Image 1 (cartoon, rainbow, N blue to C red):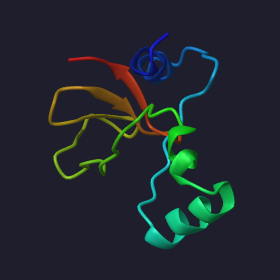
Image 2: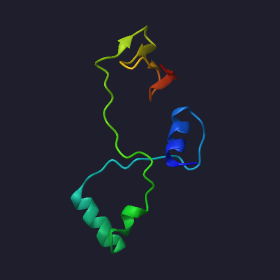
Image 3: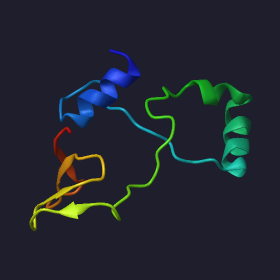
Image 4: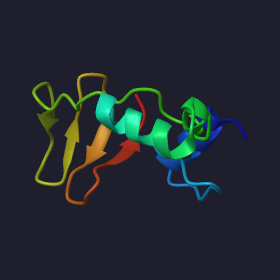
Length: 91
């Protein structure tokens, strides 16, 4: 499976191996420490870019349906009584 297919499978609550991850840091000091540890920028090629960038979740445009469900600005139905929120249907 491609990284994209793995992420989409996980979004649909399907088990995958490996589990996709994202490393959300852009820290020059951390980058320098990793470079010193590995002796080069080689560490940067050791990670699979499953998710290149992650933005915030826009909850301002969300419309509540009841205490459990809400629909986002794109029309997607979300179940909110669990963490993380679960997508229940596509548009």
